[in-house]
Image: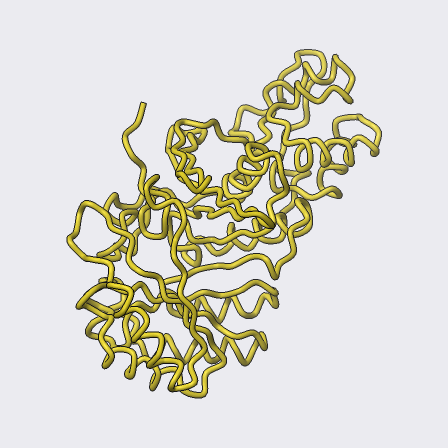
Length: 359
């Protein structure tokens, strides 16, 4: 990202930007870019580090609130956006999980989730307003697709949760609203900023995808240390297309071949997300077919018992059925675990994110 030519130079005599075009936010710029920008404003270079600290560590929302800056310059910067959203609504689950509805500059609303535990704070971030993938069991896709999120709008979600919980975010999962690999440039930019500017290690980041042709390969070529999680949800093409209509143009064989290429390029295993739907994809024969698909694959299967939404009548499998599925995979030497989602009663669990009409 090159901030210097993109952001306006402030006209001190009028206290207005010297341009009438839409002003991009500062959030997402690194310390060198911010330093270049403040120097262009006629300020000493050290103010770049100050600005970086106030944006990423102190979570300032407007430049006028940066008390370390001269009062006159703060007034001149009043129209320059940092790139922060405003909270529209929140819901809190009994387990401490908080779902936030965040209002963006254009009035669109996006969701993010803060998931606390004793030793970590995880943020589930969105990458799009809505989602075009239309998975049959997912609330987000039922509302359609509006637009991609910008780099700043993705990073803002992390800062929002970190400020609200008053503790450092330790883990981030790109598993909120949207398909990350359909917004790959902004997602990659956000990953680099989250890593370098906020200070969260790449190994603590997970990017989830339904699978977009050639995008997993593109993602692999960036040599990141993040975890790739592929939403598989079925062991064969017919069932997968039933659950994920967009999968009709991307055969499961091709998807898995690209995943194997990802493993070869990165040296990192792939994680396969598999939502268990009672009497749909949770039978022993499904587990056997899945094990054959993944034989010899450097991978891990993450089973997710279905979280209900109102639009469809899928059911969560009983514990015995879940355990039997796990046993079949383990007997075939497939690495597997079960993830029970947090925030269920706040509609903040996996597959439940949607923009509710609140307020």
